[in-house]
Image 1 (cartoon, each protein chain N blue to C red):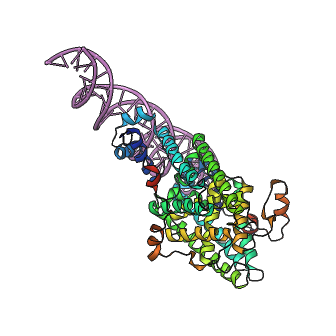
Image 2 (cartoon, rainbow over the protein chains, first blue to last red):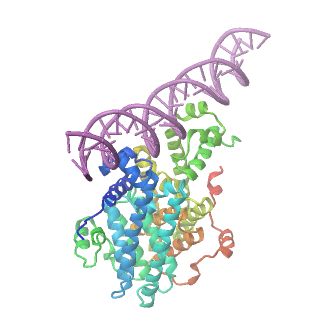
Image 3 (tube, rainbow over the protein chains, first blue to last red):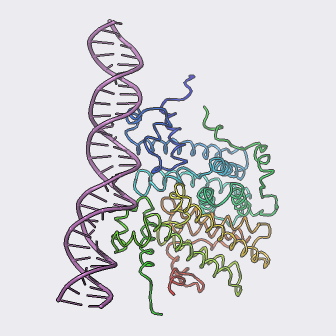
Length: 225
Length: 225
DNA sequence: GCATATTCAGAATGACCATTCTAAAACCAG
DNA sequence: CTGGTTTTAGAATGGTCATTCTGAATATGC
């Protein structure tokens, strides 16, 4: 009952953070040994090898992400457009905080070129995410929250691709604030009310803006049991 | 006058295509020797090393890209919104054709984590692209072609990030047609006339659609002297 | 046609890395 | 304690890769 977190889970989390910030090829087993606190022998007997550990990390990450999307987007007690805004805010907040994009969308890609197992995980993850977003946009459209000319599937792909792109650019191109503005502009444009100039975020008021919103999602909301 | 193309340029182009499709780490010097037709000695004396060759490739690519953007976007004889649509159509067409995103935006990132010289090139390239797009969106807005609530800078960042994201997703997630639809939906939403359902592209009519448009850009338009 | 310089192909080098092996240390049941 | 098992830290292995070296082949100048 009080078993906080399994040994294996701790290893996965430490490995995830290392892979996430340095990439797969730039992370050596030696690095993982140091980061996880376990020695080579333990790592190899727990997972089998570096690639298998990476796959375990991806599975862990994908499960977490999918739960966030599904839980938020299937909450029928509030406007779908809000739920959509919240999940993508969460993505942008997280990439702002880490300074790097989605682990599956922006990091795993390089490995996917060599490892079909990685490519498959990316594909199925985004397929699930896209389905959930499409469905939410359909409901939003029914309620008149989204421009009726936008096909839900196109809108979902747009939002997902945009977040992927922001993740790619946050490393070298855009500041986190700029990333937020781009995404806000997209959502506003989709909803047809690109109207008020207040969609922009500046660095001074940004933290209040986001911290005070009631429905904001943090990683902890979902990861802690 | 008739010097078609320098020896060095041919090497750069062959190397570019190899790096572009397989990434930096997954391309060995041996691969480059085979792909370029020149032997190790020649490659090393021409460029200095693998990284330097990659930098030369990036410079070549960035110059080409920048020229396309600047030439197209600064053509004041036609509506800026058309120019914007054309450059981004070009990007999406190219990634559809190659099955991989922008070399600087989607491939060089992994190297940038280790090599500051690569990171710098990415940064300056997109900074230039963003400036050009922002300016074009300003002009488009003055002419009423773009929703006046969208800040040009936000809009430009949105479009650039979206193309980056489509590039990332085209490898594992979306089909080229889907990528085109996402981007069209974004442009339509920005221009405020997300109106007509005909922004969608299907695989049957896609090629005619794009080949018959008069202002379409192909890589050759710019690369051949 | 010959001497000299350039270019070639592939072998040698040295570094790095994932994985396996090994011998010592820690643990534990009796 | 003690005999045996598990875990550890780090050394050995085998492979890959970028880079340099080398001696043969080719071109060049006279």
